[in-house]
Image (cartoon, rainbow, N blue to C red; front, side, top):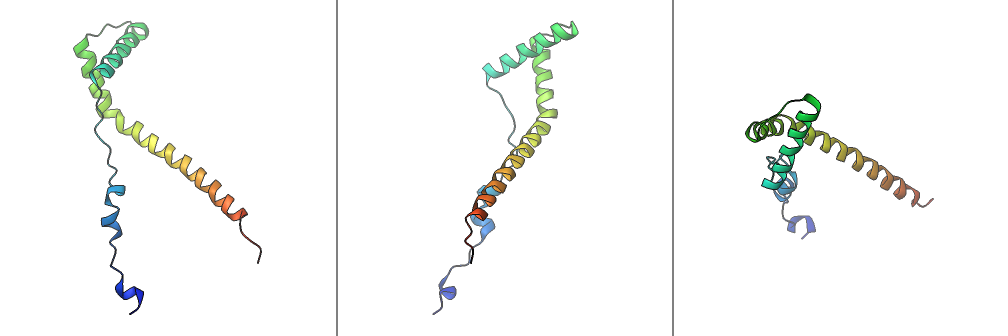
Length: 103
């Protein structure tokens, strides 16, 4: 019997589904992180725009920014990661090419 006949059929998509399921998780902050971000926004509004915003309004604004802008920053991060990986892979390919033997 040939080896091919005894091998199981492999469904790559099924076996690597966990590697391909990269949907963006909802961004959430701990209470401490949110408090620090709110303070930074309030400070910015006060110093740059001479505008005071209360805790509730600033948290609401932070939630809006997170919902509306997070995807753009996330996508930029993915693009940057792809660029870095492509450069590293190019260097690896060059290193492998240098190992080739003349035949």
